[in-house]
Image (cartoon, rainbow, N blue to C red):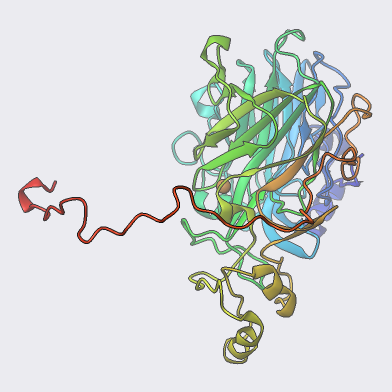
Length: 456
Ligand SMILES: [Cu+2]
């Protein structure tokens, strides 16, 4: 359940709400909001066409009001506090109490009306990324509509024409507002309950922030050099696990609203890309993969059968995206005695954090600035995981009930099925063929000088 509901909370609005007639209040759907980053179970549709609800990683689905056959939602753009992971909170902008905003779920053919109230200190708008809709509902401020000024509420109305995976985000002062966390997921379900059914349907957005160690608010002038890589504005170990029962069909839908691409990788299973930005892929077009690259502005839906029990890593394969903020330009200190060095540097550069070898040891000896996550962190049943950022775990269990989304804890591997330390003596090193090949006296290939005429 949602942790709290706000009915026009906020000092100024509370006065205004008291001054207007009940009939006027009834015209706007109630504002449902949460301050929690805890993953909510799927929201079963209380009315309208039935569908198989999705589960939003560290997020929730926005309830609606059915009015005259139209699904009415109320989004509020506002400053929020997001716990990125235990030990770090970010001052972001989002919707209905959190960043990202709540997931919106509708069914193909639904008539939808979305009220958007702006409680930000600047203008905004919402673009419904990927939707077929009337041009005036596309949400590009200045092009399709005037911007929504602070304090104003705008109404968007359209029919959800195409089933698939979508996002929403501002199309006004976009670099600022997306760097501050304004975005949300949208799923339009098929009218046909038998169309590509799955047992679990997880959704989340890829987002990135530039928050200096020791501070709370993202730098919004950053274009590429972000230092915090997140799944739904959560960094590992703050990311919830995705869970599945052995044998279940699992779908994961990912949208990328960062400024770079992310090769998303699942361990222990092959998956197929069943959906893109433009809809479902044809079965003949699919091929098995274990990593799929998701470019900027793209959405991908992947599917696999949970065939093997265990705790399977699920992460972006750019290794600097599975760590938290680090000091840029740090040297490789592999082979350097770290302890004494760190002490000496810290006396010169307060807050210094090294990069390179032995980072975990280093961190243990270094005090972190307040509100700062360790660069490589998280612990599992066997010790330190040294991960951060865009990382979570797909937990597959034989004894999990259908529809149970609770964290089942760490996997208890059967005896004899875990990598183990060799206890005996290592064999002597031998080189094949007896002697090492002699080094050539001269380079075995010709070096051609670059020719100016061949350069383009
Ligand atoms: Cu990445």
